[in-house]
Amino acid sequence: DAMVIQNPRYQVTQFGKPVTLSCSQTLNHNVMYWYQQKSSQAPKLLFHYYDKDFNNEADTPDNFQSRRPNTSFCFLDIRSPGLGDAAMYLCATSRVRGGATEQYFGPGTRLTVT
Amino acid sequence: TQLLEQSPQFLSIQEGENLTVYCNSSSVFSSLQWYRQEPGEGPVLLVTVVTGGEVKKLKRLTFQFGDARKDSSLHITAAQPGDTGLYLCAGGVYNQGGKLIFGQGTELSVKP
Image (cartoon, rainbow over all chains, first blue to last red; front, side, top):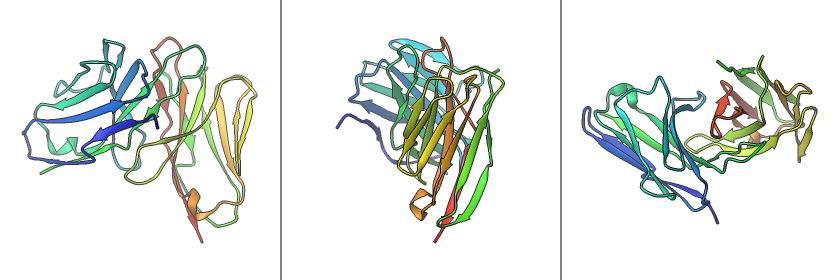
């Protein structure tokens, strides 16, 4: 089945220690998104790639970076995690076309910062 | 800035009751999606509506897109404990590369 895969599902890192979260997709969608979600809140968009074009949200901290080496993979790098960065990180994909904008989410990575 | 106001934020009901969740905005959206999210998982797409006035049904769930494409509602008939979760509405933004504007979410708890 076509899907969005996130690894790992759970990640524990230390305060200030760089961490990378990964996302892969078999949907062949041209857009990939990274969201941060804190408990029972709506997902907050960090950035997205439209093909190779990187689009950063204005309020995304510089501490968060992303790479998309090819259509299938996208990475979220947190350079110096703080306690406030503990959250669920969601990857999503979509095929942008006229009309509907459907995003398909992965299962998420729960990040704990100790 | 486009906003989607979702209400209520929390809803606790008994099995068998009906409920409606609302999403309202002053902005026009190209489409409106509804997602359901269970604890520890990613949101799962339930439905997409794109035409003003459109109504879609998914078993006991009825989704409606307002005529002006600024608001939407989700109605659940005879709620079951399996309906428990976080419901999110999300509006598609024109010419923004597939970007969605999310409502704040409705935390639904259905008690047996």
